[in-house]
Length: 313
Image (cartoon, rainbow, N blue to C red; front, side):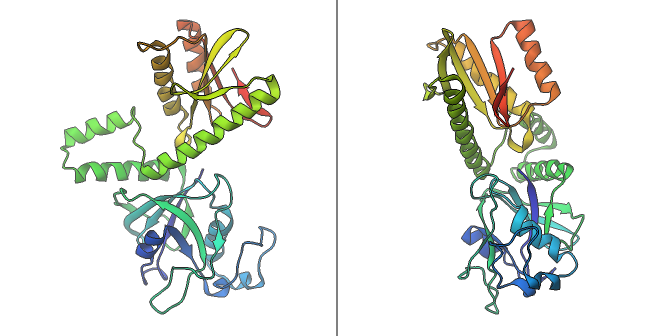
């Protein structure tokens, strides 16, 4: 999943269309040469004739909006200018990983002059988002893909601003940031995305188990994501989405749930524990899990999707 930054104004400092986009749950873009051209049927190697009339950063921004932004991506909205305010954040709707762009002839995004913006992506905007000041590295670029450093900076800046608005002291703020490094703080749109990804991962694992091992797994039994019996051993599976690629945090959360589901009063102990991530773990993640298995004798298996199904260790 990618993180993007957009400006939703006419030009660099013209009419602000962010309130209208937020109201209708979309992000929008337009440039005069192709404002009425539906890009749905075009591809990377096939552009409309009017594309050649785009100039400056326009082709890059339009290319990103039309082809690169995908379902599940995060989208920030900024005020225009070299410095300023980040005012919005949302999750791009649609099937995760699928092209999100669509052309809407009857677009609700319309300038005061009456001109419509037909190029849209649907977005689940986070109504609890707290804006923050930041420095833009490319103020003339309408659609910008965030670097890993920017992802971290923006997330931290939003968190700090949110806490400051709650009148936390400096000491309380430091404590809150330390806590949030261990306990995740997800927005409503990110939680909705995680639910979708979780269901997709669970269904893929179920299909793989049936196709490769002939085992029918049971999903969502007594709060456990998945359970089955293999070689006489009761096995539980905990699926975890590494949101924004944070596998370490996902493993930490999964281990807490696995221990609870096995040892909390009235729970039944499983002979085998599987922790399935949606992306490959890092080498340090694997060393950590293997050390838990070796030193504490935990019956733990870690897995993740690969080209043929799932890899489990």
